[in-house]
Structures are given as structure tokens and as C-alpha cells.
Length: 141
Image 1: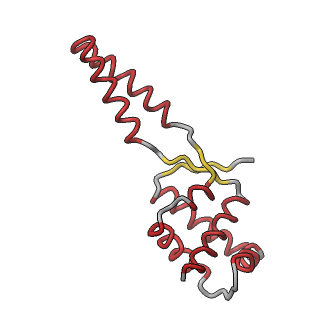
Image 2: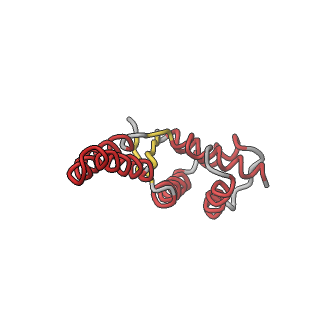
Image 3: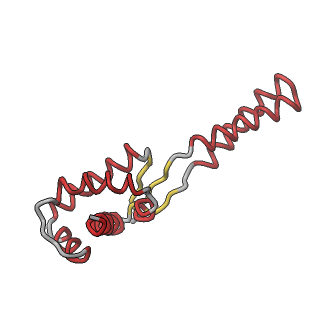
């Protein structure tokens, strides 16, 4: 079973790498911490008006810090915890379950020669990244 997980994860990485997919996972917690900290400091320094100014500045700073942090999707996939990888593999198996392969290279070759299967896997991967990871996807040219 671990070999199958590794094979399918490599396949998904190959597909996303070929499409040059990048994703930005939203770090809303980090942005909220910055906004809260700035509001707190503003309140200490300037009283009630300082809270408003600090919160505004902190909110803008937090939004700026967390925007545009795009990473290649293959890197994100390989950094997933094992439970999430298994979940993704189970979804992929629903699409490629009828294929017979011996290693990741053969599996990748089988899928890359089948445009319909590629599209189904790409759609599944896109849905997973956007819904489960709550990430924004970009395709580089």
C-alpha cells in the first residue's frame, strides 16, 4: 500500500508540474494575529483612536503579508500529512483504479497517454486544492 500511495502522489505531482500549477494557501490566522497585535499596540500608544488606527494598519499589513505566497502544487502535495495524502490517493484511485501498473513511471506514462484521464485527475486535484486546502490556483505560462 505505501508504494501505491507514493506512485499516485508522484503521478499527481507530474500532472500538476506539467500544467505549471501553483497555489497560495491562505494564512488567515497569521494575518489576524498581525491585525490584532497592531490594534493592541495602537491602543496602548494612542488609546481608543490608536486601536482604530492600529487595527487598520495591522489589517492592511496582514493582508499584504499573506497575499501572493504561491508555491508549486507538487511541493504542496509532498508536504501534505500522510492522512491527507491517503485521502487524495483514494480520490485518485476512483479515477485510475482500473489501470494496472508496476511503478510510478509506468503509471505516469499510462495516464499521460490518456487525455480524458488526465483531465479527470486534474479536475479532482484542482477541486481538492481549492476546497480542502482553501488555496487559490494559478497556472504559469
